[in-house]
Image (cartoon, rainbow, N blue to C red):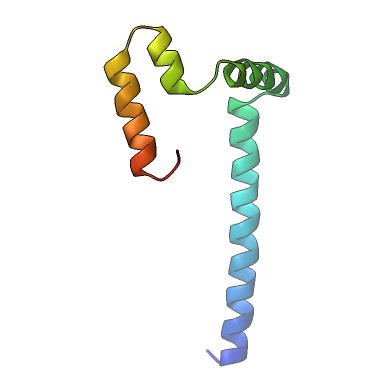
Amino acid sequence: MTPAAQAVAMEWYECGYLDGAAAERERVEQEWCPPASWADGVRALKRMGLRGPFADVLDRRGQHDAAERHRAMLKDRGIA
């Protein structure tokens, strides 16, 4: 196969591959995330954001060891 023909074949393959990936992503989103659930998801995310840091939630639950492990993990990863 000539280099030009190979380039055309690769471009053709890439276009089909990307179209197929986009179609599959859309199918999965429709199957697992129907449009009605997006609003519910946004409300849940807002509620979770109002609770404060997860370590504080663990402290309020009385899980102080878990809270300390969570804080240490965040510190080790450079997040907090």
